[in-house]
Image (cartoon, rainbow, N blue to C red; front, top):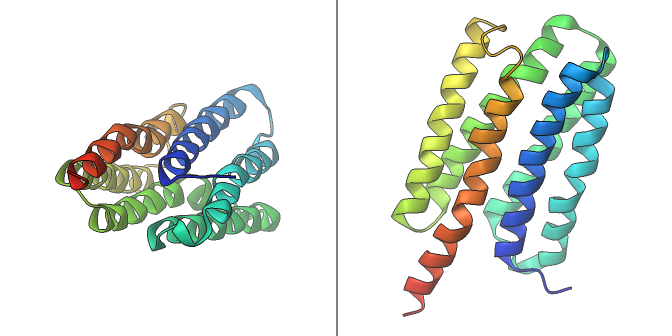
Length: 174
């Protein structure tokens, strides 16, 4: 299997966007959505993790950090769900994902090459940090729309990075 970094970025962007959209749907359609959401995320995140493994040594540290951090955040979510601790679940299923995005995109902004790419990820980091603050202060702030917002500020930036990455690599090869 010949996996490229561009394919990996596409895989991450599509699965994150899709998983957040499914999360929003399940939150409205199911009476008790937590298990369905957790297993949806576990299943959808298999694609980018498998693509990362297939990329092997060609994957950079940034990709491995995202894969590891995603696995840890999901394990935390499964643990919070199993513990059935309402305050922990409130944090785990809401503010944690904004904080995760803020930290991950800040790291990405530092790690990627190209001004436009750095600006894209820095902007995503700021939006995620603002989301974390707002949801932390008022858990109902984005009620009913939170995962749509997360799809926009976490999944879409990776998809927007596809042409930016291609352009940066073309300029570097000239």
